[in-house]
Image 1 (cartoon, helix red, strand yellow):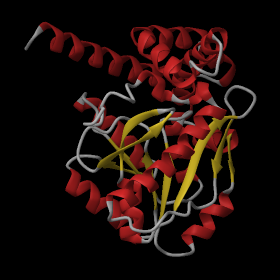
Image 2 (tube, rainbow, N blue to C red):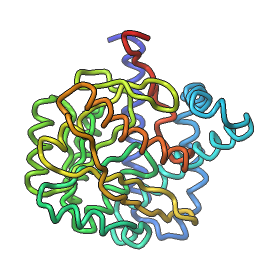
Image 3 (cartoon, helix red, strand yellow):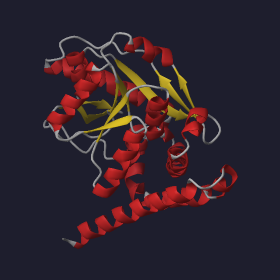
Amino acid sequence: MSFISGYKRFLRAAGRHALLQGRRVVRRLPDPAFKIFIPFFAALGWLLIERKKRVILENLHIAFGAEKTEKEIKDIFSRYFDNVGFGMVELIYFLDRPQKIVESVAIEGRENLDEALCRGHGVILLSAHFGNFILMYLRMALAGYKTNCIMRRLKDEQFEGHVSDYLDQNGIRKINSLPYGRCVAHSLRSLRNNQVLFMLLDQNYGAGGRVFVDFFGRQAATATGPVVFSYRSGAPILPVFIVRDGARGRHKILIDAPIELEVAPDEPSGLVRNTSQLTKIIEGYIRRYPSEWGGWMHRRWKSRPAFA
């Protein structure tokens, strides 16, 4: 084992122990006492992602360099870090307080989802690593929806087990993105059972089943899964995002109307047009709530098209 790989394993193990121990402490604290720890946990969040600072600023300049001032970009950067740090704190707090989740997270546009489920083909919920999206999963499950989410396996196998067990105990089925064939089978089965399937479409997709579409003026490798699943199952696609709602600790989930996809999904041009349409919706939410997108620390434009 190299020094670098060993060091990364050490950091993952340290992070896992810190989160698990933090949860044990926080679950025993009443609300007023817990709030005392917010500045500490927020500062810890800053330290944990400080090494991503250069990537975040680079991505912010790619997206907004031509339309925002340097001061505006730095303001987004600052609010983004605050959201990440505080988001870690509140998620730990909410994990063992389901009633608090119901009280603190409103759902707007629920009628759009209920009407779509009446078709009987399940619903694909298009979203992103946006706001406190794990809290969104929990709130939807608590609202009575059979909730499935496609997620990558975590590199820390022990923490992967903790996460999967917790989600399962709270009514959320985690579908691993790999192996691909099993992911497809489980996803389609959930839709056939008229359940909801969360798909996050905002990260660089380096495998097969991708197309390059415009994202903030640059070509970005994007998975075609939501489009393909929709045509194979008949499930409508609804954009769903969670955003902060005024006071700290309060959120709202925004459920939009179904997206009308174009025809010819099996043709390359059809996949590109439809996937581009979905990506533009995600970009629109990021423009409205730029400090809420967790993807600023991710290399969204890492893969380049062959003709670039």
